[in-house]
Image (cartoon, rainbow, N blue to C red; front, side, top):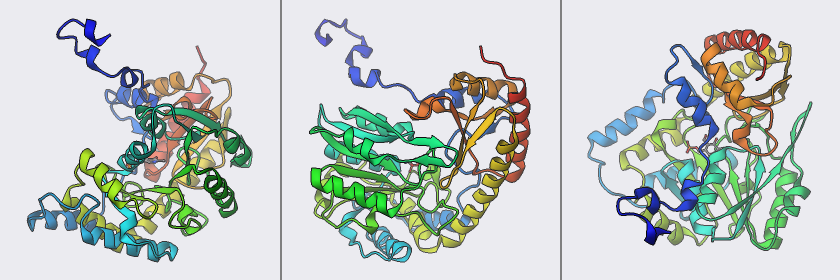
Length: 398
Ligand SMILES: Cc1ncc(COP(=O)(O)O)c(C=O)c1O
């Protein structure tokens, strides 16, 4: 108990719920890699190309022009206008600026939604495998996590919506789903979105639709968005990010689309969290939204080339079974005879100098799987596949 802590026992001051949060096993492996020279890192969801110059230049110019002050909590007026026209251009949708907030990363947008909705004792239903940070953010705000695993087979990943609905009860605040998925690449189809929305409306449960990979797709111009079917008053929250489509992971910029009427709620939450994203960076975001299509197309073509290399090589490797991936930029595979994928990934860093993420990081449904990010150069991926093949051939668990 806090009252009985000796003076100076700082740990005694920390909320137990924070101490109990598990660290991400992805970071565990990543940390090991810092000491390994020449390691090819495919652990994180990050392209190996820097942000294009036209975006950097716009931010640098804004900084030089004196855009260095506090600004509107939901983002400067031109960035909200750019978000409006981006959604018009990509989806043909008219969404008023009052439903957008520019956030300090997609992750920050997730945290804002968690803070807005979750009360102690609520639960959230998360479709897994999923990026671990989302559920951790929900837990930090007091939610119990109910994971519903997707099915996996030779045709790829499948979503059992009836299992999602069955996991919901009177204390369920939101259903989390990423499409395209990380780590699965799974993409929600319109009919599935419609069933999900119908359920959410009937039960007044929020849908947190994580669409940060909406442009990283290979068989269509963009992934289906819940925005295409949601009414302005539906309990639908969309997470967007500048990280993936425009190679801006380090900028920590994203956006949130929320139901109409909630602008004051999110202004307040942003005010008390970050007081808004850096103004000059927002000029980079405007350049990305308005003029970034050519870069995105080039980047997606590069990912498609990486995907082809990885899928072809994994498909031919003895002991490896690769699950077909449709969107985002990850491969997920199992290795015959390997159940402890954290140990597999740790040893791969040291013994083969390749960085991958263990399946156990991604929750139910990812047991025994390994994830790698193929948003990398063809040269690095080819070398990484050579190293992996050699490593797996000699790998024995234990
Ligand atoms: C599924 C998913 N959602 C959200 C994010 C957060 O993106 P960021 O915080 O970089 O904008 C990521 C990042 O990897 C992700 O994979």
